[in-house]
Every structure is written in structure tokens, then in C-alpha cells.
Amino acid sequence: MKKILIVEDSPSERDLITLYLKNNNYQVISTDNAEDGMELAANQQPDAIVTDITMEGINGFEFCRLLKAYPDTSQIPIIACTARDRDLDRFWGQKQGMDIYITKPYSEQELVTAIESIIK
Image (cartoon, rainbow, N blue to C red; front, side):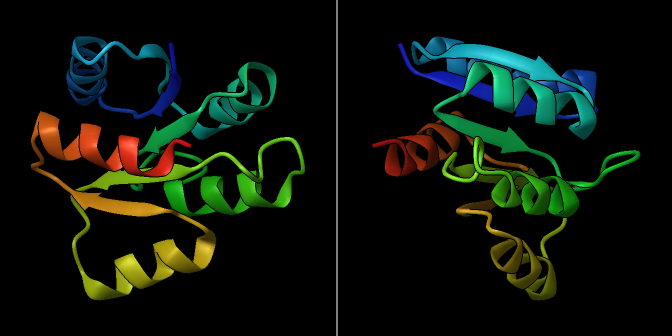
């Protein structure tokens, strides 16, 4: 069973992503902040990470940049699920190493398809 780390500060959004992933037979670990997300990514070695961009403390862009700079987590694919839908945000996400950028609202199928496309 593939393991996905969710880093999302909104409890309702985190619960929705968890539901979508469990419906599709993924194992889910989650946290509400990027600091804990860094530790979980290094220790749990998930198959992919789903993160928000706008979070307190370390935001999703910084989180991605930190993950990609650390050898133990640099190869983990990252999907941004965010309300930030400007072209500049997408460009900045790509520059930080995000593999896929999805804007809210998104469907269960859209999220699952994105994950399937980046998990080898």
C-alpha cells in the first residue's frame, strides 16, 4: 500500500484529502504544519506528499524547497493543493520543485490521478 503524507493546516481540508486517499487504498499520514512535515517525510519516507501553500510558519513553497535540498527527502514527489491559482504561484511552485500544482476546488479523481501519475 502506497503511503502519502498530507501537510495541510485546515482540519476540514486535511480530512477531505484523507478521505479521498483512503477511498483509493492509500495509507495516510498527516500533519498541520511544515515543520512536522519535514520530520515525517524524513522518518516515514512517503511515496508522495500533498501540501497546501498558505500555512502558518513555513509555507508550502519553503517546505518544498527544504525537502528538495535534503538528500533523504529530495526524491519524494510533491503535489500542491492550494487556492492560490495565479500563474506566478504555479511558476514559483515549479521553481521550488513541486511536481504537480492543483487548485482548489478539485475532485477526488483529479487528486488521485495526479498522485498516480507521479508515483512510480
